[in-house]
Image (tube, rainbow, N blue to C red; front, side, top):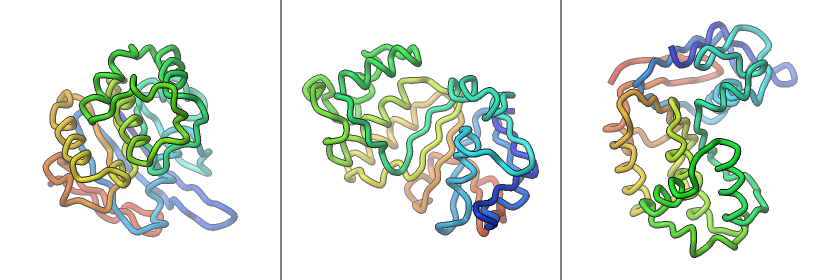
Length: 213
C-alpha cells in the first residue's frame, strides 16, 4: 500500500480541519481529489508530506511515518504546489541543488522541461522568483516528472498554464508508468477525467465520497 491514512484528525486553533479521515492509495491509483475551499484537501496532503503534525490517527507513506521518517517519505513523492515557492536561486543553481539532493540528472530535467516548451538553458541565469507564473509551473512539473517518483501529488497544477501548456502536461501524464500513482487536487474533473480512475470528494474535513470512475 502506497498511502495509508487511518482515523486522522487535525485542528488549527480549536477548529477541526480533518475529522477522522480514512484513505488508502494503492500502486497505480490515479485519484482526483475535489471539494470546496476549506474542505481539508491541502491539509491532508501537507500532513502526508510531513508539513503538519496530526492530532490523532496514523499516516504511512510507502510504509514510513511522514514526521519521524520524512526524508524517506519525500524520496518517493513528487509534489507540485498550487503556489510556486519564492525561491531566489537562479534556474541553474536551483536545478543543480535538486540534482545533487535527489539524484535526478540535470539532463532529465532539461528534457522534461523541453516537452513543456520551456528552454531552461536559455533562461538558466534568471531567478526562479522572477519567472512568469506559467514558466515557474512548467519547471516544477518538469522536476516532478523527471524524479520518477512512486506518487505524484498535484495541487491545481494547471492553474497558471495556458491551454497549449495544459495540453502538453496532460499528454506527458498519459505516458506515466502504470505503477505510478497520481493524486490531483482539482476543481476541473472534466480536464483530467481520462487520466484518473478514482474520485474522492471532501467536505468539512471529511471524505464524503470515494468511488472508482
